[in-house]
Length: 418
Ligand code: UDP
Picture (cartoon, rainbow, N blue to C red):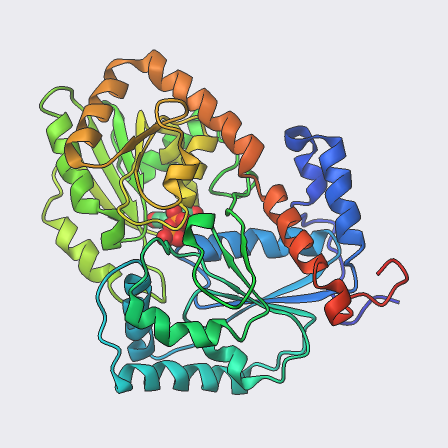
């Protein structure tokens, strides 16, 4: 009899499964990952974060949760709800974890902890593994009797967290069974075991799947984006750490030497109250060579990354830039800010360029627009490096390994193979 908790398969609708990765990662890798999934098939996993869309965490969860389910592991995803004042506090915390100042007043901690408590009352969590993403839902753990491994997955750039904030948050973190950061450089002084897993992309998603030239044309013309000049593109949430004003200045400087058009596309995540303000501050800079678009359209992101002569991600802080990997996967010539995870994603001069200033970014834009062979060489190397290191199949395997490591401690498996 069908499991009443699982929907019946619909032959008209297909999900990406690990088998689809065969041509990209090979038969052996697919079989190895499926065998690991099989050993965990009884395990019920829950992810908790704070937004359904906008930003890399939602992008990853949208794909990874389905891929895990397709491999037979029941994997859920819940989003906490919060009032605007909660998200205003958590955005300040996010900024401070990336190094900004914050004044941790009693009012802020009260709002933060109150909303976490309210969400714990609403969410009945009885899973075998609970993965909590980023600081917004971090205190949830306080309100459950813990009988399963709880893992805190922190996606932000933790190169230099604000010490005051970190001393407030770390007691929550230390209640978890493990912490996962994106890079070893983000390790903190904690009693909790720390693991490091770099994010990854789904090559079959709307953002990343192959597009024909006519599909790209159609998508660009829908937004009135002319293609008479080479396109320089940055795609990112409207956030100061993505340095959108620096992008505009770099392109203006480059344009003194070579003609091009900038397209800056962004969105505003539901848990990010600062996005509108950043967007508004950019609109004054728009002209016929600087297009600023605030839309949520993954097919447009895909088309732009494919058509761009140069893709920029001039971030000043970046836990791991999914947009960098997305563009590299499409064979784009990518220029990234020398920050956080981008330094791991791009090997300077081999599969893209790393830059530390507006002038450097402008120089690289000019170089890539003038030397299309170089752009092609870097783009080809970029695509291969994503295939080897940053596809979601690898991310899923690392999660399976981590979940599997709790097997004995938490009796995660009922079967003899446990
Ligand atoms: N994204 C999008 N539309 C936008 C801006 C971003 O779909 O206008 C997507 C982008 O393709 C990527 C994610 O949002 O998948 C952003 O992830 P990233 O790690 O680059 O940055 P974050 O927002 O998490 O800091």
